[in-house]
Length: 279
Image 1: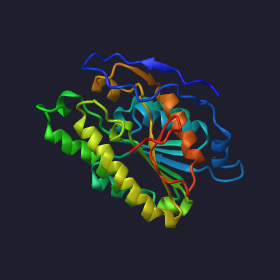
Image 2: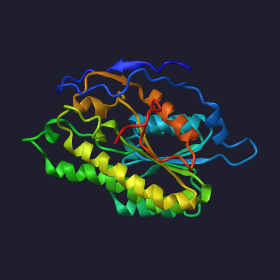
Image 3: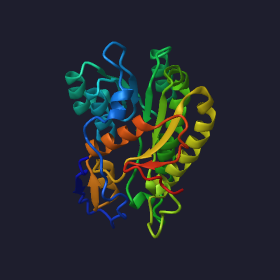
Image 4: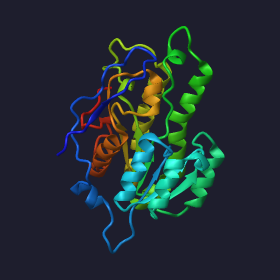
């Protein structure tokens, strides 16, 4: 197994947040579990639908699954401006780019209509808003931003999962939501700010436990996974200045966890290094 490289993120916008992940070890190559989950040469490849793929972790997820031979439906809010994603689609014939603003119900309905009757082996609810520290600090709380954060981080993944539940059930597949260690009461410590993001991810965790209860009898595994501290624009904008994984490392590590997950897993939030995050 190769040790994941960590980068130092230097944003300089605010005091650093505590390092959430250290010493993460994963292979960037496909594992045996991933190979078992991928389709064999004489059958149709599995399908993954991913939200928020224009950059960051979502883009890395799209590339990882495309390389593994999956049929990748990569959605984003502005496909015409998603240069990196469009370049990826030009490279991989098994990757298609689709319009989806996760906060718009009409977009979700249109996407569900386009894929009506199509089995979806994996739905990854990746799109999220982190926001900056000043707008999420006491004395400067921006409640319009709070509404937007909840709309993207909580309402959208639940609404999309509800709309595509039949597709995932048809494949006996999995629905994933990307959570965060900052949603944990246990890990909170002395960390300040990020009210909106932390509250949204805590709400997401609760919603996903309820979703698991409803969908497990239908043969759908519902998973919560945290990517760890990842060098993305969102993280830099938050003011974090510590060590971080690359997007490729985080996506590969999470893909391994997804591949190994079964219907009987308890559905607890799992960090990219395999640790169960305390609630």
